[in-house]
Image 1 (tube, rainbow over the protein chains, first blue to last red):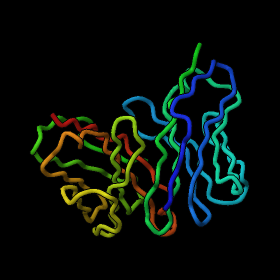
Image 2: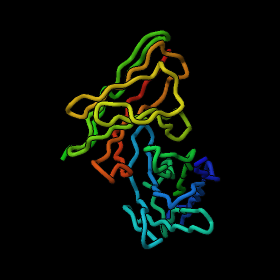
Image 3: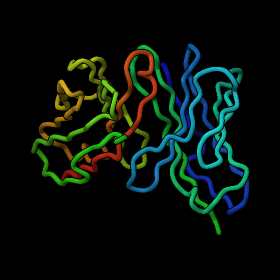
Length: 113
Length: 114
């Protein structure tokens, strides 16, 4: 069955430090992968997506993610975190043929001043 | 270009009542999906509507039903509300043809059941 795992429930980093949020997926075919950010009480904002081609994808707000088929991973990175990045981050895979997204349980990011 | 809109923003209902949530898709989109996001969880797929029909359904009871109108807008209905139905309900729309995998999310409706 398709699934998405985000191993880190909470992550705390200092402002200016680098960030990596982990995402592992289980899916038989080539996946469509997404990262979303959600601020408290808000909807989901798309950060970036991977469909095919270059395995390093750039997104908004200085985020990037790398698709690694051999590791079934799609980790999100940012070289220097800003206080405004504090939010919850969700990784998702589109399960082709089922028409639905499967989300991970999210990683809550806290940024220390 | 308006994105996905949802109404109402918040509402409070009592156990046993019924509720209707509404969604207008992004301009040019013809497919609407609904997700439930319980507190501290990732969104869970409820169902998807395309051409006014339910095309796919997640693991939700029949108390959850929906409808899509000719203008592609959609409603989510929940009957016999339970405390566990308290959640953020997200609507997502997607475009025609093979862009169905690119879903755009609305701001959500926060439902509280007391």
